[in-house]
Image (cartoon, rainbow, N blue to C red; front, side, top):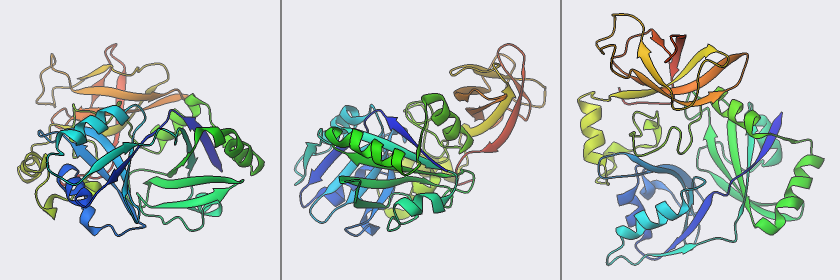
Length: 317
């Protein structure tokens, strides 16, 4: 089954000029130099301290790069990149006309492939296509094959806002079911997929967020690299993003978690974890950052026992 969700608009920036590839290589975590025209990749825009500004999708077109930001991040990403354009031959253009963003969610790759047979399985891959008379760009944002602890697939469709209703009618005619916000949130958490600003923010590094598979520490210098390399080599990651479970209604976003046994080296007064996303199920599934020295038994602010599941994504240690 494939479901669609009408999202808040993802941001799109065209980056044009002879120095664009070099600039993106210096500013983001993944190896942009390895991406030929017609391909793409996922990459993390970082602060000097190695913290997450946003998780981007970078599309390499024949005449330009397209930078796709998370919903709500367009202006921040635009300003951040402009800070580092000094004498570079790079021009940024906001693509406000691509104002419709529709996410496709599926537990199986084959379901997505039926809609977009030419879309590669690699995260960051993209294809321009016409469906229902609407020209769209389909981007693969998540694929469980690239990140084994995640599940399912998520593909983003971008098109002009004026064509959104026609695209939705086409999806409905092809038995793609609409997802309500709570349903989309439940799938995202079940699939172990983070998002801005819940899991991805300047509070955490991509290594803590389970995004090591889109961090190329060996590619050469980039902003935040020294910090991430030191954390990786010295194994000093303080936090790790996990899936957790608790009885329904026992957790809320932003709630802190405490240790429940003396096994931990963290004192009872310290925060052992922070809940970032919660899905309302019979048994609540959630995502949370857990301190790496917190031990195996945690409880909520109201003393409810928390079951810690697997860490999310990939890491270097």
